[in-house]
Length: 156
Image (cartoon, rainbow, N blue to C red):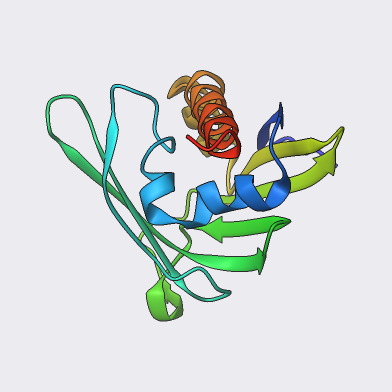
């Protein structure tokens, strides 16, 4: 059920859930789609398990880097991942919690219904995320994810 501090998007991807999930958990695949081009991912250091660290460092076209540390809350292989920036590795509270992100990979029509949801701590955080371009940015990333998964399915 959606709430007043939730942003979400969905895509039907022509690849099975296990393949789409791999694109999320394998660093070399995640680096190919997780940030809107022309941005890149300069580092992925993830321990994909409940309580495991998540560190994704985004790089803008000018070379500035933006670390995004957090932890995995839920990991259900090929089905669901939930992460948050509210904690750092070892359950240390972060300086400022912004959101909990949930990604689901549901079988549908021979492919995957991919849904990404960002749940924000405050209404102000939600509005800031919208103004940062949630729909455009996360939408472009979802399209890049779909393109990568389909190319892997085809053996690319």
